[in-house]
Image (cartoon, rainbow, N blue to C red; front, side):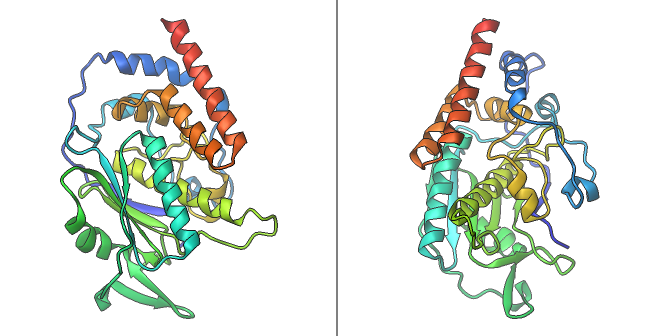
Length: 302
């Protein structure tokens, strides 16, 4: 079976108390509707995640009452830890992912130095034909990463150059995260490919950004999105990942704004600055347009 990612959905203690009447939530409920035209409704194609995994999704209103796991004043930094041996291209991808993560979630992000894989127990490895040594995600989630989790970490994200599998019933996964331990592991192994149009690096980057932002969203209690074509929509193959946008839909944008206290206008401008710096003017233009749309909606409401 081919899957994008598996997420352990253990419930942890709520980090916040949700008031029955939340002024910020009421404001965001209006603001999110302003960017609806930028996101087409969910379209399920043959072989897509929703075809085999029917889900109800999660609206902004549902998120407010879900007791989400969120950063706190003491725990607000996202740490990215590379584990394995990486090429120069992969290292560049990881640096850009850290930069995008900071703009995307509005939290401090720290990219650590490469860490050697070391000796992995035989029970946590297997070999797939012809000579692909895979690592079981439990080795990272249960053994390695909890030891590296710092007190101020909202999340610890591990990137590895090795291929991953969650158990013997699966062929592989691109990543897996756990809410309980605030850790996740993602693989770069299957994300790059040769491209005839000279866009191989951009495709590699986009896939990495989508998986990293998606799985980190799960660590903040975001469920899969089923209402719109959204970065938080489930995908179970590379084609599905490639179809997804590089940002979240209106419902999920409101979750980020409310849960992480991140102003939508500021966020869209930060994303635009990232894309402008990295030579993607179309993405920058789209984010600036959404910033202006949200600003106009906010002023109108005032």
